[in-house]
Length: 390
Image (tube, helix red, strand yellow):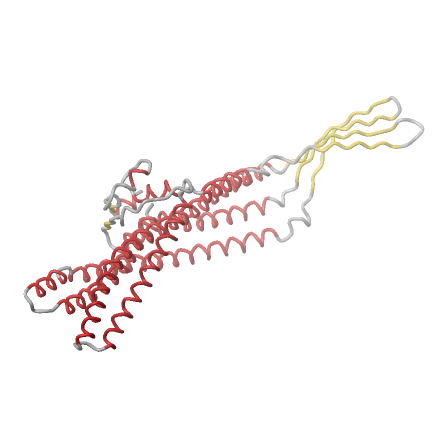
């Protein structure tokens, strides 16, 4: 929590409310919306069931060995048999070590569950942002298509009047064909994203309310430190090192002989003889090499933890840099917002004709398509940063 205080983050400002009103409390919260979506998915239900099963599995093997009952019957002139009840125990400290390992293993499974949930949230976020981006593209491409249709009509009239060549008409027609294909592709992207999001939402469609607005403050190092403190993969790697160290201690204590006690009844004829049974089991071969194996596993876990930390740091630094780069690029592209106004003004003043106006608008639509891509990349990076701080 202290790391979160170092990196202030605004996640709640959104450009629409219809979508978020359907999500449970907290409302107007992008991450809350994603959580409500994935909680309805069969993938989430399966992951929860697997986690519950893993918890049960890690609690097995903590009890002592099962008691043994032996009956020996000898064929003789008289009835002669022996009945033995015995129970084998490990040394008491072994049960303590195994209980500690069980708790660590359950914590490790919890981190795996968190990682799986993070993956589902990232999948839902990717699908939703793709849906929003596709809808924006469809709106833009439809306007560009209309603009190109007007251009083609003007070129056709110009060719008939001898003002333009057929090559110029063919170039405009090619742009119109390209626009038709782009519009169809954007429609397909929208349908695919909507279907993926609907599946994650338990079969219920999710409306598009536009991109959420993310606002981050703080340096790159503050973000990296905050995200690394909450990263379940790093926490899982740290637990792996603890489990490996505890396994070394357990493997050493498994060389302690097992204890066995019991009760024995021997019947020869009609005369019973009662007695006690006590003994030990020497672990001479079964645990051979276990300590060495545990030490090697502990060294590997420590190395893996260090590698995971370094890899995560690089990934987070790149993510922060990408967000900053795309945000600056988006601001740079937004400086051309008055271009359409200038085109209309030039057309009204007679400085350009209708064809030049549509040509200028075509260039503006191309710029807006690039802006949509940059906006999508910035929103994707911001959403990933939010998930790392979730």
